[in-house]
Image 1: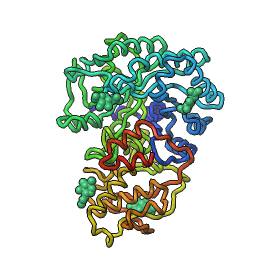
Image 2 (image 1 turned 90 degrees about the vertical axis):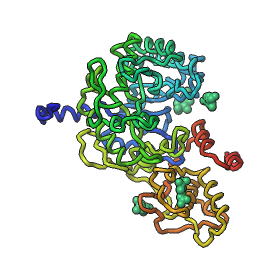
Image 3 (image 1 turned 60 degrees about the vertical axis):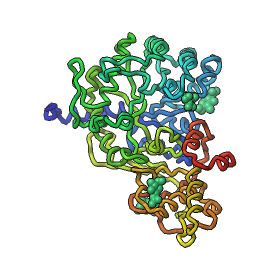
Image 4 (image 1 turned 30 degrees about the vertical axis):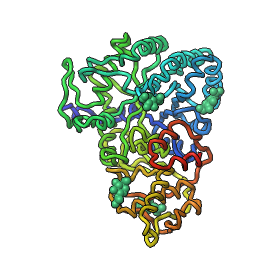
Length: 482
Ligand SMILES: *[C@@H]1O[C@H](CO)[C@@H](O)[C@H](O)[C@H]1NC(C)=O
Ligand SMILES: *[C@@H]1O[C@H](CO)[C@@H](O)[C@H](O)[C@H]1NC(C)=O
Ligand SMILES: *[C@@H]1O[C@H](CO)[C@@H](O)[C@H](O)[C@H]1NC(C)=O
Ligand SMILES: *[C@@H]1O[C@H](CO)[C@@H](O)[C@H](O)[C@H]1NC(C)=O
């Protein structure tokens, strides 16, 4: 139907090489325990991944990328936007320390991502004034330092910066409340030959709309196509991407390059977040990207960054419990499912992290003989889950089919591991005990913590938000811990 028989072996090789150029991953660090940066970088190399997007310019991570040939997109967090916007010297200093010095050390920097989804509707306009001036100051600082020709500053936007009243791509336009600033930003990007960066989440389209046609979330031509101005849309990725392409066209930038800054599928925490659907999504999407056909409005190869490399247990769960399960790999760098980065659809496991140091093989579980006081057991469970990550217990998740005491053991173990297996953290009023037999049950993995690699995340806004939204009754305990 699509002329696969015409594609000879030679073309297939070109596709493979081409894909390596288009594919990158997001490497986030909202985790309580980090694998050493050099191990993560080796993992990228072992999987042939040669582009990486960061959310800041963490020196340990950036230095580990020096001399590897891996292309880096550095990030500037939203809380830095105001500084960058209103004091040009901040931007200059940032470029000097995080771009010029790293280039000198052999890091290949292609882009600077200014802010992260700063115009998200839920931010209520907080970054509306600062984002464009910050972008301008960073690009100006890059130009002044002589990097402007090769390093482009841009802003990673959530797909909620545009909309289509009819849901048809051709009706796409920038959101009304931010239209003026978006049009100015697009002009600026255009003058500097910089790309538009957008995060597109078919998973969230499915998740946020009970009537969403299920198969349309996947790029495997299983949904009925939707027609628009003579074009046929077979999946929501194409439709979403072209809604942006139409919005850019109407803003006077019909040819602006579009980079997909984040795209992926979570594996736990919600009914539609599981390994089987993640595998299906990535298989279809990577195959489509490898074919290099692009979308109806924008034929050609697309550059994209998968979200995400690793699970992050400190991500805010405000959007949903799935937020902590976006990793293609677990937090410890172990592969979760078959994924073929070359887009050939082979049933292969990606190469996991090598040389990760684990803590002792021991688990903290409930002592069933000490659970007469059910109310107290419940309180201990709540306490453990207020501090530690219990999102895998949620409805539809990997640990949702255990009995009550299974739940309690899972919570106790998560708390114990998060506290680096501190003996005192397996107390719970005498209800808990440390065991050396693997406590995992069925599909539910009771993890062993890794030895933290030294750089510890400072508690930031997102981390707090995660706690607050998951809090039921532990307000006092939270303030104690902080
Ligand atoms: C460089 O980036 C790091 C990490 O994001 C940040 O902490 C630091 O403040 C930046 N340097 C300057 C001079 O802004
Ligand atoms: C945005 O406004 C809503 C409703 O007033 C509020 O609940 C929320 O905390 C605000 N978010 C931010 C980031 O200010
Ligand atoms: C275990 O916990 C989950 C999540 O809170 C809950 O849905 C489930 O009903 C619990 N199981 C039992 C037997 O209490
Ligand atoms: C415990 O068992 C689970 C499930 O069988 C397995 O995936 C995991 O690797 C085991 N953990 C250890 C430390 O052996």
